[in-house]
Image (cartoon, rainbow, N blue to C red; front, side, top):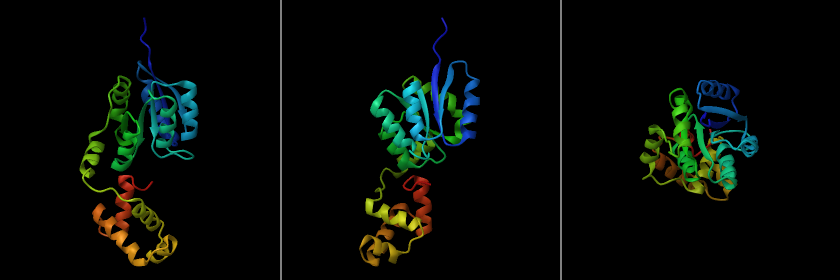
Length: 208
């Protein structure tokens, strides 16, 4: 009797990434790619139709991002096994995805070495988190996360908005905004505003 193959769906907005994953899985006799999707909305629809054993879900996609799509799928299918795909080992998004039910996290730079073994491990019920991601999460566990107001200020700074304009938008004084940015730079160990935005984007506070 031929053992049942592990069925996989891949959701990623980059065709080359989907093609690369499809090619890699073609080489495996125990794994079958049964569906692909280019955004989160279609990923949810494709999951309902195919009910794959393992889903590879890109974190950043148009229409609906990977975390939203994952949450919607898990709300309907709590036993779904979803692995998040990402370019960055951002500890904030990694923590959020894992807390919401992701079974694994796969860095796109490590697909060549980790893709197949991650699919097999997750299918068998083992949670897979690359050491780079786990280290990022552990490193920043003791650091206070940014407050909602600090995030609001930082997003406006990232858009190139001046302190004065931010103060007007939020209905506070310019000194208050400067205080928020001082706290942000202290928490992120940033040298200046630009550095703070760069670190926040890399760590997953801001969508990059």
